[in-house]
Length: 250
Image 1 (cartoon, rainbow, N blue to C red):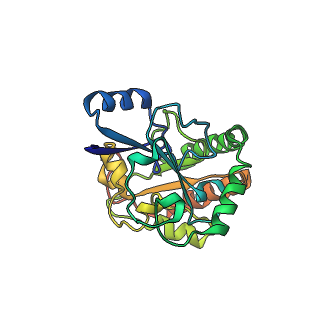
Image 2: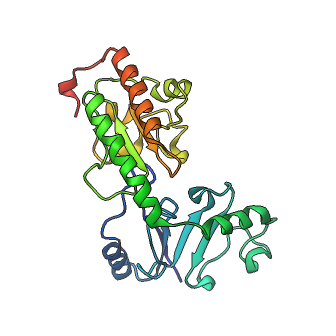
Image 3: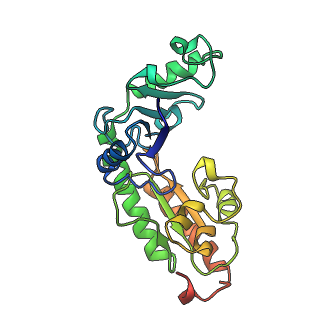
């Protein structure tokens, strides 16, 4: 009988950080909770870094179509031992693992996109763009803080914080009017009005976590687009009067 199911991120959806010491963590779970199943959420990693289902010994690995350029609505789960998992939605689809009408077109397009992913090409193309973005932000945005800038991350994600404000300054909405689509967090956090909970859990102040932006890059991103984004953000920051002392923000 399985007593617990543990879900671990391979890549954090908010900061792009690649989970450190994953093998060690899974080994500890196996040691202390031997009757457990381990599920690995690899959605943010798919197409961006190389990984193998047997590398960490997880019991299940989940990815999603949207992360490789396919339409939303399709998820893919690899199961090491399917008989160990009990369906949540009973039915005859997916070899008896769930019910409901299958999204045949979505599944086909997901498979087509999966056949064309190239993590090496993605890394080699997007990583220089991220470096350019981060250098530009550090140069042009006074006091900007880049979350986890010194640890290993996937190439496409930059989460920045703008110090000096004790209330949210509607950065996302103003940038949207300028033609730049950014977010306050991952899609599952985008409707949360308060400080970003992941950043708060990491030890950043609520003021910083409230005035944060998650920027995603991709194969189609250009240097000109990055320069335009940084210019608009710099002008927006310069147009606002800080509401707290810069030196007091931690």
